[in-house]
Every structure is written in structure tokens, then in C-alpha cells.
Length: 155
Image 1 (tube, rainbow, N blue to C red):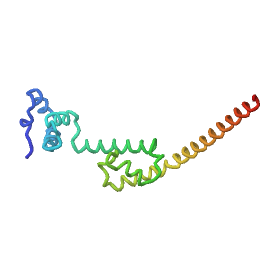
Image 2: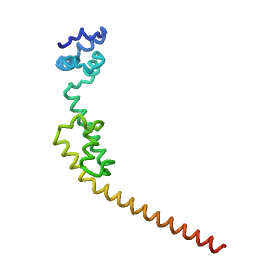
Image 3: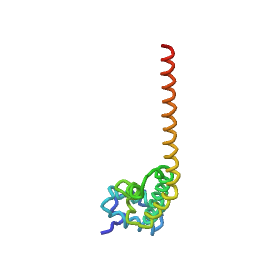
Image 4: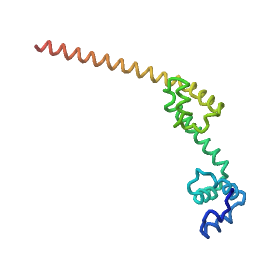
């Protein structure tokens, strides 16, 4: 059962404001207020109509933002993920940025493709880190050896 504007409990000023807005926009948001996940239908409705964006466009914007954030994640941190399965769990798992789009196979392929593109950079950084750690260990060993010789010479 869809609600009417009068069912939302809006103030007189809010009702007047809504009456000046695009009727299709108002109808689209009004049709959505029956969703059981909406805690405060009046506030949700007013925020929606004031945005000037239709509800279906809002979900497109959310998806675009989530995809953008996932791409930035892959380029900045995901390049250190060792395998595709781990990447997909990270992005599409229970707390992943793209968990709402888990069934979108093209999106999954797009994310894996980007990861494959940036992963060689991650591997290079990992290799450099291992090499740097080895050089530090060698230098530390030389310093200890030098200090030990100095003590032996002093004795």
C-alpha cells in the first residue's frame, strides 16, 4: 500500500515546499517510502525530493562511487593482494566495498583485470622490500662484527 503525502506527517511548510517540486520526482520518492528498511519515512522522503535526484539514479550514483573507491583501493593497496580469490573476497565479501554487486560477473572481471594490471608493481615493491631488509641485516651484522673486533682489540 503506497502512502500519500498526507500520511507522512509533514508540516504545512514542508507540504507547501513539496507541492512546488516536480510531481514525477515526488511520486517516485513517495513510492519508495513503504520500504521496511526506512526508519523515518518523512525525513527520507524530504531528503530525496530535495536532492532533485530520482531514487533509481541514487542507486546508480552509489554503485559508481563504490566502483570508483574499489578501483582506488586496488591501485593503492590491492596491488599487494597475492591472488584473485583473495581480491574477490576483499571486494565482494561480507564487508567489501562491492558486496551489494556480488552477482555482477562483468564487474568482478573488471576488478580482476585492474588488479592484474597493477599487481606487477606490487610484486616489485615486495621484492625491493625483501632486498632492502637483507641489506639492513647485512649492514647490522657488519656493524656488530666491527664492534666485536673493537672490543677484542681493546682487551
